[in-house]
Image (tube, rainbow, N blue to C red; front, side, top):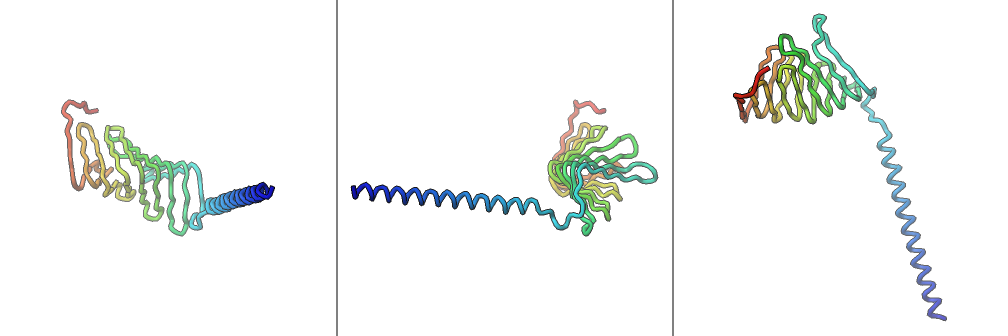
Length: 192
């Protein structure tokens, strides 16, 4: 009988320890979860305006020069910068080239300098067959020049060029790959 009382007390102690441990785990889970929600719910202090479905455009001498579409973005007045997600950037070219459409996962637009920077899975296509892929590129709207120092793959008609760094002037339609250039010309490929 004394042995049975000892076993009951020992089992009671294990049950008490198990319940205490369970309560501790549940308490820590909910306290961390509520702390995470506070961090996520608190808006960034530098954002003055958060919008969905943005559209910027610029006209020069009555002609549209470019358009920028984003699924969402934040505007910071102090930095005079818009931070954008899921971007489609259309640059209209003079002449027979037609527009160049560039897509990217994210980017930013500096309003004062009119500099558009596109990042993550940047892909461009023109109506004339011109295309390029890179991880990051900037567009100077004043000079009408795309620039990157990242690795790039550039295709124009029968010519495919891979290298590091690109400068593409949309006004003159001249491209310059800066270094580590590997070019391939496809003689059997038809030009449009």
